[in-house]
Length: 214
Ligand SMILES: Nc1ncnc2c1ncn2[C@@H]1O[C@H](COP(=O)(O)OP(=O)(O)OP(=O)(O)O)[C@@H](O)[C@H]1O
Image (cartoon, rainbow, N blue to C red; front, side, top):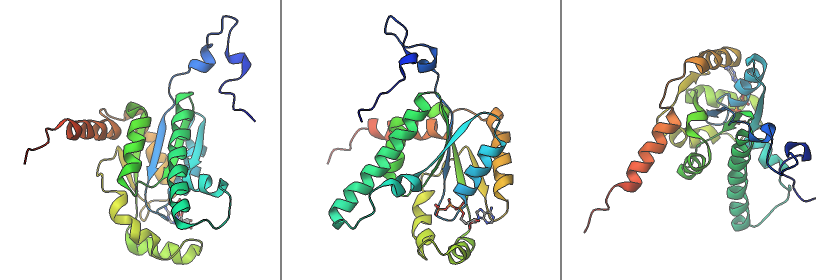
């Protein structure tokens, strides 16, 4: 089926878009943390406690949508990267159409953050650090049994490497519901520049810096 970006009713007779197709950007609540840190649990609670409608977009669901078959390693690497890139663009597309989104993702490679910085309106992103100490992550991995042991340990050094957040939660100290309530309470008093605006500015300065001559 050919994709249709807007319903017919979104266009008036002159062909220009109506108000529903021109909605301002939705807010992106971006939960970043290792596997087993509690992102999905917080996202579920957020959708219950937030007054406005939100979509929970977890990266795992995009991986689960892909054909489940063995592919050669090189092909798999390409498919994984394309899945992550497609995920980022889906989030950007939902937000651009005016939908509020809760993103459940891991910034475990620098290019992922770069790609999101290119795509998301930085003033509309609330970057949430979902933290949890390694011993508790390992306990959860053992208990849930559906994640490879050692996965969180491999991710923990990179996921928070960019260093800046709008708000952070420690899920070893607070329940998913408590974290969701804190995030909700933060939204009306969030400060600017946002973490994404700061990260975008840092990246811009790094790109503009003169290359030292040899
Ligand atoms: N605040 C919390 N306190 C105690 N246990 C928690 C908390 N948050 C999540 N858990 C437990 O940790 C496990 C992983 O939680 P969850 O699926 O939310 O993590 P995740 O970060 O989305 O993981 P993944 O990225 O691997 O999907 C679950 O068994 C969940 O019940």
